[in-house]
Image (cartoon, rainbow, N blue to C red):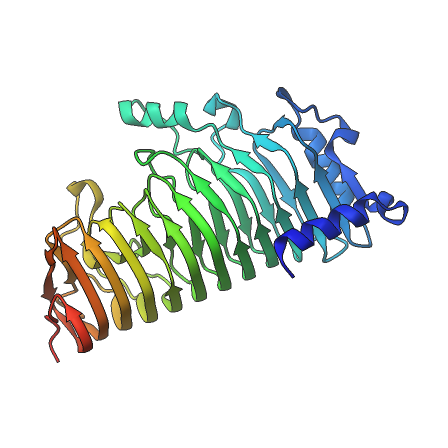
Length: 390
């Protein structure tokens, strides 16, 4: 079922007399669409009614701007089909101190069968970004939307703009579908990852457009069976597995597919990044296919000496074991002379790297490739030529 049809059906049933008892408008609980009245408690009340309904229920946010502070929408619910339908804009406080140092703005936890459809989340993060750029003891900021320890989740047609920190986080979840999402923040906004997935399985991200100041999509420890398809990235730092190896005891990442992604002027294309320190983690069974790069720095990158800012770097050998990573049909232009860079661990070299049909140019000439401790094979047309050890 298409998202548009889904929304139309929701609107139809929400307007029918049979469903009135199971639709809970935030305005019925005191929320004001003026962008300045604190509507946090009204949103919580609407959620409690929808979540507590024994039959499928909808929490409805009509048009307008609703100011909401950090809030937790807790489950489990009495039903497994609760929809949060948003026609308006949910606005975070422009004064980041009003978040009381919370790590999350809108948090859903221990829920099943919840859908968040449509609407806009405005994180109003610019004041916090300015504070961070001045280096004056600022909080880390809040993720705009997080699902934690939840199953059977859908996020569709949602726009998230100017998050204080990450825009969308999927943490400790199973069976999640993210579709038709738009993420926007300036290219210089710090730590504003578009979608971050960690400790989760069977997550699908489809048909989304992400432009932000950090990774468009980042994949954290413990992620398995992740499918990403038809995602446009830029500005941003690319689609990244990692960073990994921050901790010595860390769950691995496996079975990740990225298909039909496009990158425009990003700092990286498809990247795997790990810290240069001992760790028992791993990355395996990763498939990058049909990616197109336009003026991208580091279109293909494995960096096992990751250290942003180049200060207090561990300068050890990465313990993350990387194996069975395929790059197939990766085309476009590199903004750096080296378009393919594999900088792998000296203790555990990358193994099973496969390159097939890769064509990358730099200033209308073939890009170059660089390999350190990288073993694998190559086939088909390759530009640059493979530097992998066979």
